[in-house]
Length: 356
Image (cartoon, rainbow, N blue to C red; front, side):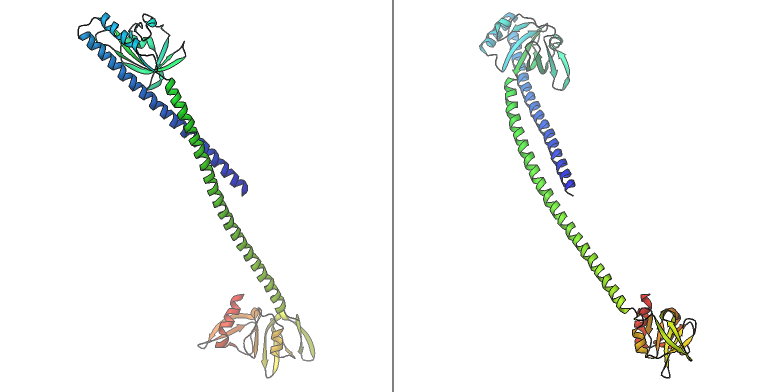
């Protein structure tokens, strides 16, 4: 029983640990994905906004050189912090950048890659994306610098320029690490509380079940002891009811004949003489009263039919109705006197017959 209890407890603790771990991973990854999507929306918004501003500048009559110069001055005044803007042409050359030392540099073919949020298994070369001159966003990984950021590219109308909005993931990682620590502590706390609560419930149910089983076992034990006591008492009574003698010494003429109790068919009183008839039909007399004889006979084998007759069960061949309320026993050997069971004895006689 205890082994089963410990096994159940172990599996519950293990199951809780697995479910809490999976839930922790799911919530953390969902939160991380939501933050990345939010950063991507910010990058997309800024990229489209700057692209639209440059397009309108060109549409207002400014030359490309004037537009580039204005954008460069604006970018230099900004910082290259967590979020910054730069502009490439579709060949991968830096046209504008907050760090003017990087302007004019063309990125290498294998400089970096971009993974789309919609399919993280799909990794594309950054320069090839610029060559397609299409809007695109995802996670930008720069190999040489071992740097990861969120980037969104938006082409400028009627030019070969592409605005790139960069969102550095350093602040995101700090937020994620803080969230991860808090979430981990929360899950450890809930895991421990769940274990304590469930183990308490298991122990409570186990104790109730064990108590119930114990009561049932005690009840069964008491019933067995009671049955054994009854059987012992029955055996004692049976032994007490067993005849003191195994045979009678009967008279037949001038002879004394031993008559085994087991061979007696019936005993009857006629003209103050007690006759005993065995199963072979031999008749002899006993110098005892019917009452004295009946006291020595086994009660499950002999029945006091009346004041004149004692009947052995083995001699009964048939029982017939006699009148409205009486019974008549047909015996073998045939009795010389009718063996009638009176109305007062019928119920007791039937009960005696039914016991066998």
